[in-house]
Image (cartoon, rainbow, N blue to C red; front, side, top):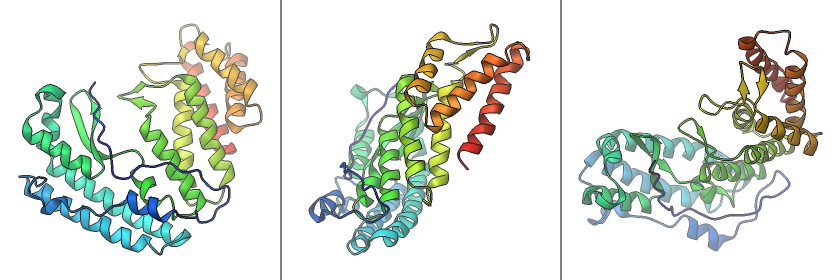
Length: 301
């Protein structure tokens, strides 16, 4: 699997505030993170694909507009800009993906050592724009914003809850826990991410980004407890959790007994232990999933 990361203009890390308020900006760091770019007018960076070149020009212009607006925006005003420009920039990225479909479809054919000059040129350009070629599967690539792209733009301006949300999403994207249906991190790392997202849910109950946070939390929870098609956690024939996963779940319960994650894990184990004889081998795991879905919804109300 080939993953090529293109380093963006918009990277940095900041500690988040404990209250839902505006983060005090560091103006120099902010200006550095969103420098003005004008690659569309530079022959060195122009692409032969006219549609892609047009979208790049619009992307540059929108970034400049955003920079001007963020100079005076604070708190909820900056949040509104995030909601507006997140949609705009994502739509531009979607358009770039469509216009670059030929290059993306052929990208898997080359290794780092034999990339055509035209592809190297594209990589260099998108590098400057904070975009990289993301490996979706063995033969499919897409253009994607680098981890921390939106966090780097908005982190000094938005409310604390959005600041925390963007920081967590940036960390998730930087180290994805799943690639091509394969879990890429250890189960104890998934446990840590569960607790981190649960902390966000507890800390910012009134956040406008709560639905997205809960969805991310449940994505982690489902993989943590149920695995994937290629990496299961349960053996149907024996009606037992795999030993290494069972030990991890017991550790979760012991270390985090008062957390939502710890309580759900405990109830999941209790259900399996007490219903082994009540259901057939092909039914028990399905019933356990249904049970976890119900209790998760109750805990996250």
